[in-house]
Image (cartoon, rainbow, N blue to C red; front, side, top):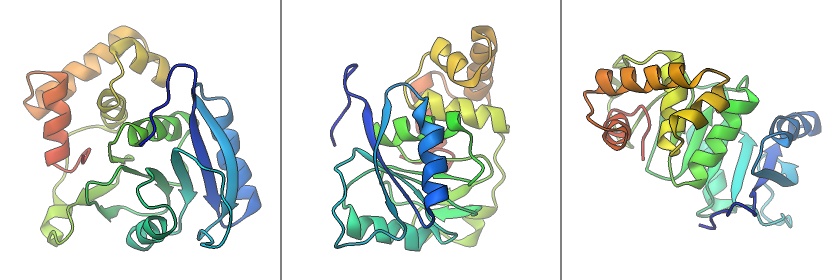
Length: 207
């Protein structure tokens, strides 16, 4: 994986079935620092098309996460991706992917792009995950984190300090610190790193 430096933005290829959807996703990312949309294309990806090289794929990918992931693996093997669709359950295999709803905000989308670029798999609010082959029971377990705490957890996993989390979410640094402390308490973690590991094991933020 190619890591962006302070002078090299994370390059993104946007994929969607309709030009208006592609333009909308590109517009969401246009104002996000450190991220640059370098190309747009159709969904599903055309195997014979010439796409500009990108560090991360962002795709509005229908409602079947498994089919979407397989299509990406075939067209862009090894490239981290953020998928947007109408799903509440996805199976994860440890690949760096993000799963968000179609109404994700610009901040949520940008945070997911940064997280998958860092090698993480992230889930949007209300989306549950289990490892391949997991039973239905794995999907039925309720989590203890609020929607805001899930947002903070994504940024926590991306390595942002409290100040960075506050800037991303438009909250005070004190509030960000409070949310981080609550997450650690709920997950029974003694450190930020341990919280990310626990969350990953519970399917809240799979690695």
